[in-house]
Image 1 (cartoon, rainbow, N blue to C red):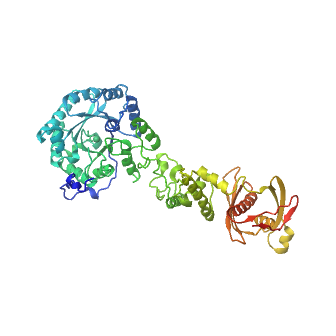
Image 2 (cartoon, rainbow, N blue to C red; image 1 turned 180 degrees about the vertical axis):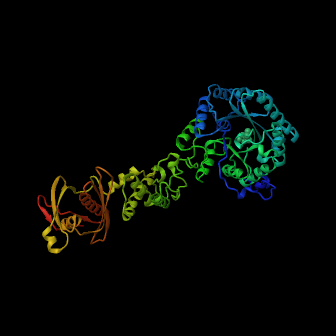
Length: 591
Ligand code: KIV
Ligand code: ZN
């Protein structure tokens, strides 16, 4: 890069406009939309679309709800010409859709264009010529007067050709190409001259007006507020303003096409031309999906339907052979996903209180992904940035686990360790909810990793004891299996867990216990969480048990916690099992 870029680049001169109105306006209704995917978008493809691809994309655009579609540049190639003919001859254009065709302002090309659209119920013929000073000077070597002459001759010719084909309902469009770099007074002069020829009738609604003046940011050269000033200047000064539809056509060279098109609407534009997902020359045409969804998320229906966003994206990707960036607004595969722990935590809390019929207020999610046909699957994904919130969210959402806070912290460490182990082996560090669930079951010995397998239990109230002490008392007998042998233990306590702890006769006590239902309906399972402390070392661990019998679930949770204490500490808590005999109240600690 140059140390002094001013030696090569000029800053854009501000527009001389007083008391600009656009900063105080608000967008309250969508513009008339024109999709130029099949023309400007197609022109920019390394491999332009085949007729079959164009037909598929045309159908998609119709299904989305576009009423104006620029279908091609029929004088530019036989494919373009044939495609337009097929649309008309095969009657593929719905009555409420108007096709638009582009032509340069040259007689032979204009005549060929009229041949292409012959028989259309309605059509917009779009002419353009370059008006910017460096184009006039460098590319065309034309004066301003010669440039106006070119445009007006073309305007007259299309009017005459249209008059000769009255079976079609015609509209005409003129674009002063590279409007953004054209002197405003000259842009006005040439647009006025063209519209003067067309003599559009008064009193028509914006969408039906017979003349469209389209202001292309063929190259985006300034801040979007400057573009807005340019549009407002034209809006105020154009001679036939109330008889024309004022349109903008933004390219995205500075990455601000969306802002420019939005500010352009504030400044007076009635119509916007662009492409789905911002396809188009160089950095693309303005992205109509972003613009439309920006209306939607302000509570204004854009008149375009993106309820099946991913299916729409698939068709566009297929037809254009271009990928969509994973962070592309509204459609990218990551745009409704949070990896960061604090974001996930906020989202989880937001979902918990979100009224399904109320105003959308989930933190970090500017819209409900369901509105564009997405599930909540991708909203929270867990990687090494995520902390405990994300994994708790996934386990709750997909497996119905409401983990106690202490267990979230404890299991969060296990998740982190598993991810660190993966990343040190250069493996992907994302944890799907299925992987988390597997790690959870493994960590808490939910299947087979507990040394002593629970077999069955018998629980009996001790009525005499209860009568004597005035407190509830229960007796438990638990059968366990270890290395193929069956053992049983017996104990008493004021509940099944206390009785089992008594039977185990280990230096442990219960710090916390929670029990929840895991699934609903028939075959519902209970999940028990028990937090145990080993009294001599002070070590604490959670254990988890899952069973359809709630007592069994809590006994399993106790065994799981003992297994975890043994696994994570310096301890070996040996359950004192005596073959064939019942063991009551004995303790054995091997260190
Ligand atoms: O970007 C542009 O200037 C164009 C015109 C033909 C409207 O695509
Ligand atoms: Zn363009």
